[in-house]
Image (tube, rainbow, N blue to C red; front, side, top):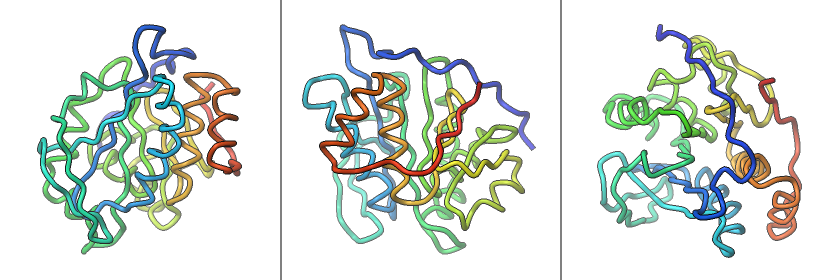
Length: 218
């Protein structure tokens, strides 16, 4: 079992600074669940209109076209560049031996890329079963975290300190429960970086009210 990682303090509000936006990279791969990445992208995009957030799609293999769980094709043009990101969002890809998630774990390319990406100042965010990709990268052992309810026992068995909060914030590791909780994760990260008024703006634009608990390390 990997040694527990030590969580640094989360970035202060307005961590993107006045001279550049908060840079959010969303990882895509074949079979990725649409809602897991579309929800956060939509939420972050509210602050993209005024330049506070800059979003990029990436894959661990570099520029290519991926096919989502529903067969939608998305062309990713940006290179894998974790040092150019402030937040990396890792969406899920189903569960079970035949799932896209399991294929990514067996291939090992994405888990190795995520493990190598970790550095001070970077937040890794797992949405739904995407937390299990962070787990495969050795990034959840001994850390408070959560995932889709159907994967919680597996996450626990692999050394994660599973918390029942809808969003679990452990500094540079932020995870959430299933599917639509990805929207809540994104709104929480907006609040963490830009304050509650920015989060309220996102909720108003999306006509979305967060629910459940945000567990935060003290």
